Length: 138
Image (cartoon, rainbow, N blue to C red; front, side):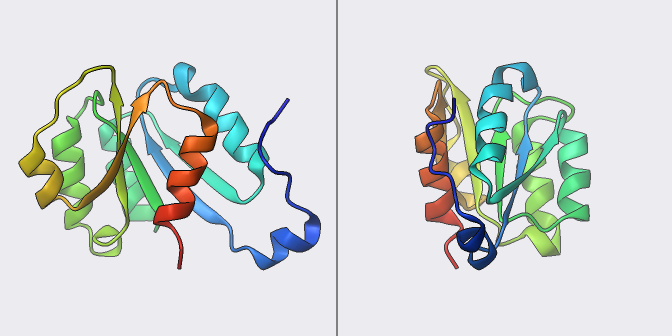
C-alpha cells in the first residue's frame, strides 16, 4: 500500500509531470522506491542500469532531475557526472547523488559538478519525493 498522496485527476492535469533519470546498477534494491514514485502519479521515471546508458539517456532526454548512484560503474560516477555536465541540455539539471552507508565522496567534485544534494541509503520515499519537489520547483 502506498503511503504517498494520491493526486486527483484534476490535480494531475495542473501539475506538470516531472521526468526523473535514475542511474543505478542496483535496480533490485531500488524497485520498491521506483514503484512508489510511479504510483505517486506525477513523475516519469527513466532508469539507466549503467553509467554509459545514463549518459546516453541524458543526451536523449531533458530530465527535470538526475539521481546518480555513487557506486555506478561503466564508467564511474565522477565520469558520468562530468559527461552529463558537458551535455548542453543537461548542464543546469539538478544532480543528486545516491550514497551507501558511510561512503566518502570528493567534496571538490561535488562542488565543481554543481551537485545539489545527496541522499543516503536506506532512505524513505517521502524523503525522496521531498528532494525531487524541492529541486524541480519551477
